[in-house]
Length: 309
Image (cartoon, rainbow, N blue to C red; front, side, top):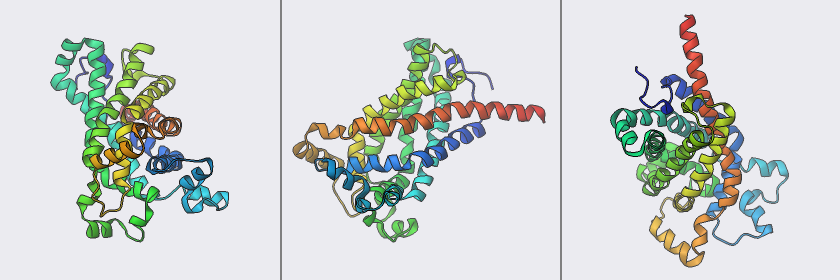
């Protein structure tokens, strides 16, 4: 296979390298950051004003007055759903974005480069591929919905497994909020991959993004993560409130937005943005840095293995 016309798109790693690298980042992220994700989802789902004493009850729920070890364990609800979702999500998102990038380069790369220039065109291809990946991520929505319900509204699914839930509620109920999810993912993923590409291009002046060092990937991931979280924040709040409701709820995103503006003000769309950047940002930085570093690593390892054979 010939290399891409724009060196900034980097070497095309094998499918195995992409799956191994992104999958490993998903497993590591889950083990380290699932409690952080639970805290963020509970803060976004809270509709009342937060006091210093109320914060404890919001984060730890029924375990608020329990011993410290019980409080910690209360931040691990839905770990099974979270494992299935997070690993599949990272394999798809970080492993799939390069496929979309290659597809865009093959079918429209010359247009991007002639219209925006070689540098800007290369960065826009990265960002656009990320946006396309984010939209397709909606396929994994049922696992995300169940994870969020376990974190914020466990009574809605208590005592029922996945098959029982599908039988009782119907598969459509597990895709509630799919449109809002796509609307959130498209700009969020565009900003994630675009922000990373801009950093590698202008800060580190890399001619091949896949040659970035671990430190360069880390810094680029910070820029991408902060941009992604900020851009996606308003729709992320709406999406979370749709998905943490009971299955029989008929309240849609438009109604939630009107109610938020009426009772909480416009600032409600950015509820928890600062703590989310501080605690969820590192989660995304962690997994994205690992994926960007491990995919080329596994690609080189695979080449060495094949050569030695």
